[in-house]
Length: 185
Length: 286
Image 1 (cartoon, rainbow over the protein chains, first blue to last red):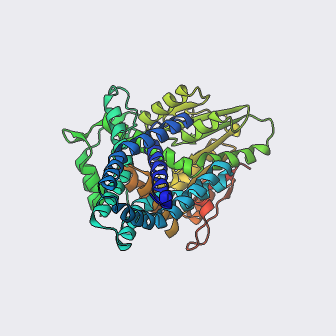
Image 2 (cartoon, chains in turn cyan, orange):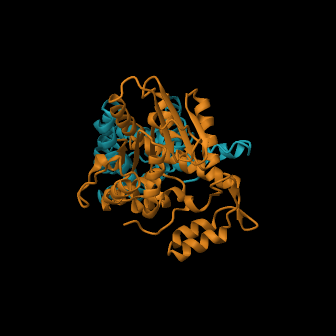
Image 3 (spheres, rainbow over the protein chains, first blue to last red):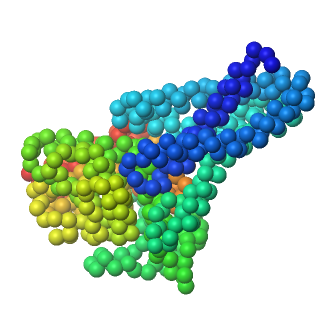
């Protein structure tokens, strides 16, 4: 281990936040209720748990790889730093917009959504892949790139996995109550 | 200028305007209409809709409509639609302090705006909130949602502007809608405004998209980012393209309700007016 412990910590924090937000997005527009704060909290936690489930095996494999091949740790750090060069500013802008959304009046909230939160959700998969490109350009090896790719795929899979959960839940409902809560993305 | 392209949600449900009875819709007819209009993508979506003996399965179409409107509600939240409407209604009501008000939301869908106004008691005491839509499945679901949250508002299936459907005391009534006007062809707009004049409503305020290239681009981005249903994505972007410019809405309001004071403004076409992406055409009684 080196003083660069912040790299994996930042990646894990970003992955956790991204998973929580993916859970929130997956639950939006499902129930039609006006007051849904409690459901929003549950959705964030569901997203976080799903991200942990999907990314946990990747993290375990990376740890095992580093234990077996200690010199590869430096390679992982190179890739991580390159990815964070893109992910950190992206995440910081999203968090700033969310903070504004939480505390400002409705006109500013609208602008935060229209200018940042919506377009950034659209851009998210491209940014995730962009991080991989930067890692490759930074000289990360094949094994490290494979792990990074697996992590990106797992992070991007959180929302579709949760969407399928909504579909399954809706299928279990009696047909007399078409609650309109499910649809695959 | 309104383009002659159809939204899928307009084609897959048919209701007898007099009796309110649901009419069967043949999938082939929907596909043929879309194909004839050059809407190949929409025709492909229509081919995937569930049908029995060639007729769209009403229950599944209802469930689809509810899903689409749930997603729309989410978009409405992000666009701050209920707050925009509440702000206008409060301003209007401030000119008549103490008077009761009945708000009728025409084409209310799942009644997002009406239920939001009720949930936050946005208009204060003495406000009667009514949502009306031709689609019985949506209105039924709206009523279920209102009951689930204990909200004081009503939902009615029918023609909101027909006598006796949503109350006839015109001078306390404000008719509102959101995202309805682009579903009407420009030629039908004067009749729409005339129906409100005939009921002598105190005011009307109908929110719709301010059309333009930026709005269409924004609609595309947001529907890709936020919507799950392919039908939502298709219809949402088309809505922005079909929206009427302010000049058309004002001319129709003046033709249909000549003694009302109309107002509606669009920004410069090539300059994004972000905060007014949804803007109303309004009219107040003489």
